[in-house]
Image (cartoon, rainbow, N blue to C red):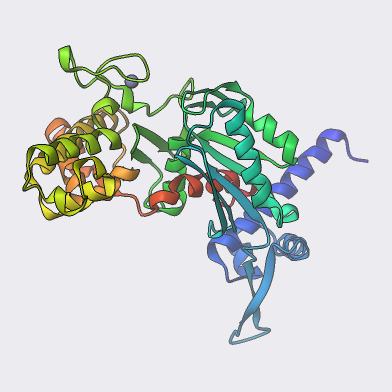
Amino acid sequence: MFSITEKATQKRAKLHNKRLVLKTIYDQGPISRADIARTTHLARTTVSSVVARLIEEGLVAVVGQRSLDRGKPAVLLSTVDNVRRIVGVDLGGREIQGVIADLRGAVIRRIQSPLAGLEGEAALEQLYHLIDALIAKDRESILGIGLGVPGVVDVRQGVVRQSGRLDWWDLPLKKCLEDRYNLPVHIANDSHVAAFGEYTFGNGQDVSNLVLITVGMGVSAGIVLDGRLHFGDSFGAGEIGHLTVVRGENAIRCACGNKGCLETVVNEQTLVEQAREIARRNPHSPLHHFAPSPEAIDLDAVIKAFRTGDEDLQRVIMLMGRRLGDAIAAIASILNIQRIVISGSLADLGPTFVEAMQTELTASLHPMLAAQTNIQLSRLERDIVLKGAIAVVLSAETGLV
Ligand SMILES: [Zn+2]
């Protein structure tokens, strides 16, 4: 008879071996049992029994054979990536975006529903409707639900501490969703989630440290340290949008209550308003080619005019870029993280915008650190929070990423 502790230890070892073998097949497949044993340093018999269980569960399948010079050909195994599915939700935009993805993060189905004007209970109801519709067909195969929420999110308790935009205060969102769906739920701040998405599926795959800066309706950062998200002592790590950058009478009041915060001068709406002002002042501005009137100018028109070389617009955007570069220098000098990635709607301004940040970074950082710190644009574009939400579930529930 085993004691309870021995049983628990054996159970843990079995789970560890299962995750290790599954991850090896996920990362290196198609792969033979012998190569799995070599990679994991597990006994051949252990590998065979774990593989048998994984095949039975449908997570792994035989995909072919590799002929050897001598002896039996080696059977090759791969993971079955669409046998389990993950729900990812992004609550940070004007709409709720939801996807169902496979184990590689590939999107299988996508739903969005309007969020503008919805707050509190109504926003929560809208979220329920979206998830209901998403999982209706796949209920049995779903591993878990991941969500990126704007605001301060207590990851350990699963509670949204403050989300001004959704009017959620101390909302136990994880519990609400787990009770309703009986599935594992993982929630975090949307910028933090985005950073993990970039780390897992984007420009962070070759590094273990990364800072992801989101520039859109506001400015915020997510930090990955040694392959793990860094949340901070009260889950506010990376709130660079509220660094004071303007002082004196020009400082604008920020939603946080302070004046002159970075995100009061660097955000999508301010950029659009400044572009409208440029168009009103200058009848020859290229902005007029992309909108019928100054009032009709939107971010898309701004980006197009910027690319054609509107000088006034370039001045405005370069100043925003330099201000971001300054904030990035502060992060880079404290953490010495070399990979900085830019996402959010303003990332569509492209490489010239990044160059302005890099110039300011070079000017305000220790030369050795500046030479090693590289700012890039995200490749994940608008799906970055969704990809991050999927990665958070994959990491917590399977250990695959
Ligand atoms: Zn602020």
